[in-house]
Length: 456
Ligand code: HEC
Ligand code: HEC
Ligand code: HEC
Ligand code: HEC
Ligand code: HEC
Image (tube, rainbow, N blue to C red; front, side, top):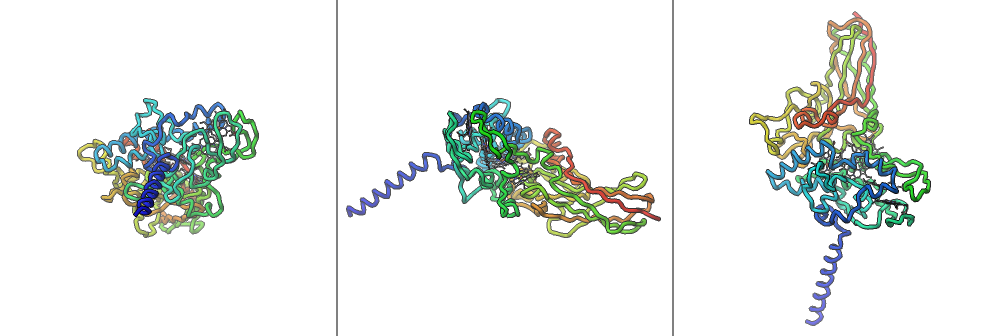
């Protein structure tokens, strides 16, 4: 009897001390981070600037420093997501969770939704120095939805250790050099369990992970220089905080090689000409597009120009796979009807044009669908994913364009031009929500050209 009471007591004590330990905070991640730490436990990025000057100015220009304040983020968060959660409280946790990645300090302070950016809240610090350099590890069983462990305080987790700094301690922490570190925020699951961001998984399943090329290699390149002006020491390989991605045209330019070749070198009117276009993802460690796949529009536009300068638009040949209709631009298809659950729309609102690019162009995308089967750009409202027709790392996609040479084509040289174009956000959506034009204007990723002769 006595010994049993003792055992129960020991078990009870062990339980109490376990609870106490986990409440010290170092093991909190994901939704447990909400409200777990105060703003004043984190320094402002400007306090790091005086010593880590170069790194600060790199970071400041990156999307990391604008994850809360950037125009489209503000519009989508406040005008769609927050409004949606007001109308349907089932979405409240997911919409608070936007901040777990975009404004981690606000999430950890329980200040959700945070004030608008114009009020200058600390949410504006976005993904700041302190967010990344206080991450002490992550929940390896998850690796999505802010699954990082946070350990605010004077220890900064880095890659070399050292004790030169008068202001903080440094701890050498290999976890920060792994792609898994990025997965905490670059893999996302919707409340319905759909994998609405999978950059890490795409990388993991591709060739670069086998070769040990982490995300940091391409997005935080190493360069000779100093990392702190007070330390002054020169290193061969200081990690640059560029985080260049889709918002930096130089990063997306040429990311995919485009080649076009004809089936013959000459044709006469009524002949069937076939132009084959090859698209090789030569630059990215993941699929293109990746990340905010629901927003992006990558499409192939092919035109032929005859000797008189007359231009003909060529439409892509169908391949016949399931869900292909979502990968061929259509003038009639509509989508995004779920906006009516989030905002006041005209009574007769029945969605927006799905694509807003020339009919018959090939679109490299993966459509997202609500539980009602509506195609959506709202990843929190996504219950299932459609066909995945994106271009994988080092993958080559091949498209053909069959064209019956029209009678009116001029004799002489016919030039065929394949243009791979890109928009950060589907244009009809951007126009409807008043998103500034830089988010929906066309960019050219690459162009391929060929010439054939037309004779009569
Ligand atoms: C007074 C100057 C000074 C300030 C301010 C400062 N640091 Fe440092 N930091 C250093 C020096 C010097 C080093 C180099 C080695 C060391 O830690 O002693 C360093 C190293 C680092 C490292 C690398 C650690 C490693 O293990 O490789 C990180 C990460 C870091 N600092 C983050 C920060 C952050 C975040 C802030 C702002 C909250 C900050 N530092 C503010 C001087 C400073
Ligand atoms: C998105 C996360 C992230 C943010 C934000 C971030 N860093 Fe880093 N930082 C890293 C990673 C990852 C490394 C190490 C990369 C590697 O070696 O693979 C690093 C390395 C460093 C180093 C060591 C560089 C070296 O080569 O020794 C310093 C110093 C540093 N960061 C300071 C800062 C400061 C200051 C800020 C804010 C202005 C900042 N970091 C913002 C992720 C981040
Ligand atoms: C705490 C969460 C968090 C971590 C950790 C994190 N990121 Fe990010 N990252 C974001 C958010 C949020 C954005 C989106 C900014 C925006 O457009 O709103 C972003 C943007 C980016 C972009 C720019 C994308 C564009 O559209 O131009 C790149 C590149 C990037 N991250 C790479 C990385 C890499 C590499 C790592 C790991 C070293 C990493 N991130 C770690 C949250 C994070
Ligand atoms: C071999 C180099 C390479 C590696 C490795 C790599 N990336 Fe990229 N990444 C690129 C290039 C090039 C682009 C620009 C093309 C594009 O948008 O996909 C890019 C774009 C991005 C974007 C912007 C996508 C968008 O549409 O906004 C994000 C975010 C990103 N990478 C994160 C990561 C993360 C996280 C990892 C690791 C899991 C990683 N990258 C690994 C080269 C790389
Ligand atoms: C698991 C982390 C995570 C969560 C949760 C998250 N995001 Fe993001 N978000 C990111 C990352 C990382 C990017 C950058 C990906 C890329 O560049 O393609 C991003 C990009 C975006 C962009 C595109 C920015 C641009 O300029 O193209 C918008 C808008 C956005 N998020 C809004 C939201 C909203 C609203 C929510 C909540 C409903 C949310 N995010 C939840 C990580 C997250």
